[in-house]
Length: 174
Length: 111
Image (cartoon, rainbow over all chains, first blue to last red; front, side, top):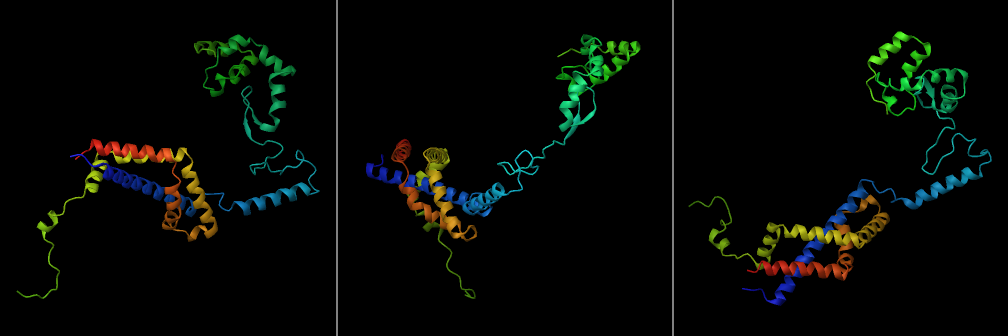
């Protein structure tokens, strides 16, 4: 028994309407949820924009602002402030000292580059030093210089220590 | 027999079985059981997103919510808001495609 054509069309329309109604309810429910949970930050958009532009205007016309680089509390487009001198502290991969981020470049200059003392550290056979990466330093895999502690030891020139190191020297260089 | 309790008569089981499920109900069950209904719904949903229909509906909802205030709106309000516009603004090719698929199913599920 085959379904006559008109019924067929009507039935299809009925089911199509059914599907569409479900989808409409889903969309409405989603919008309702977003609105109620306050997840839509653009909902109060106009007021927010007016407030922000008023703020920006005030900042621009403010005479006490001498310029962006001087003002420690200038705000970028995301509303974040950065202190003009970076204050994070971390370990220098060359000498192992704790260095402030803002002082890192000058420190590296001395530590790695032009200084008399720096040159001494590096000279002491860099190739053999590079074989001594092991010693558990996580930084050593990408540092252009070998394990900091081993170079320190090397610069003291103690042969016994160097010998010890060699026994562990099966570690591969980068 | 004491009629101490006024009770409507128990529905007659035989009477119930006399009601034939309508063609619509039968097909609906087939649609659901075969998983076709879900497939069709996902297809329609995807098409409506692709053609921007969903964004349109969401924009209408948001404008309404902005006007009324977000704590004064119910899901029902939104449904009634977007149903007429929603049904009317489905692109023709999307509607035609879905109708075609449903018709195909109906014919393959010929009773």
